[in-house]
Length: 282
Ligand code: AMP
Image (cartoon, rainbow, N blue to C red):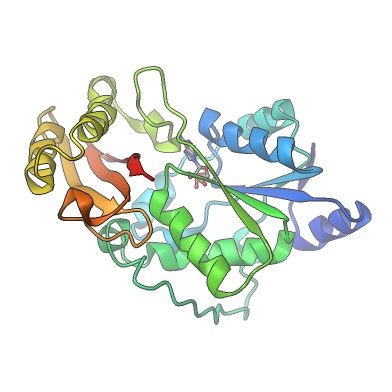
């Protein structure tokens, strides 16, 4: 695997490769098996796979979260080499956002960025759209690989691709979990032992919601799950909602949509965990 730090060098390399399909997997590093699943799928479906590691400052609304974000480039590049990724693009902030290159990107996200994560993390999705757009412009991949773990994120990027008529296919990879059900995340390493012990309750409650589809009223179910997610010491759920998978709007009645997603964000001490599950899809 080649490690590349500049836009110029990456574009030169890809040009040298000629006409080949390129799979692109953008990440912020601190790689785990969830990321590797994306790499594996890209390798299977493309001639070349480019992974990027870039902790994007514009998508963090709390500087402390940005500062605390784990940075493990050496271990990451070993994992990517083992997975047989072709190129690791690890640019500096200056390389991604050169001075004077102001983002004039205007994308109609149809309100997809305002609810759920968008409501709790103002400006977050603007930052995500900005960086993914810039990275797509640099790499010009055939396919873009993103995780279902960040449901709202891939939905918004899908909308951006559609809106700007970009020539890239978005591929969504299912959520990879630990044995006990906790969705893999780079933030999990920051959980204390006591908080980690209780973390499977998120998955358990998503599964409970799935079992209740069409039974208990949605409002009652969501209220119950909120109580359950707040039970362990230091656990504070921000939201648990049942949404339409296309519009991301909350659904009030089971029959209001044929694509239902349970979505949640929970503070486990200092760590914010997000998760989701497809409850119904026609
Ligand atoms: P991140 O480095 O956290 O920005 O994640 C990079 C990509 O990996 C995003 O598309 C995430 O949705 C995806 N991802 C992160 N965790 C998981 C997981 N547990 N399962 C599947 N995809 C994931």
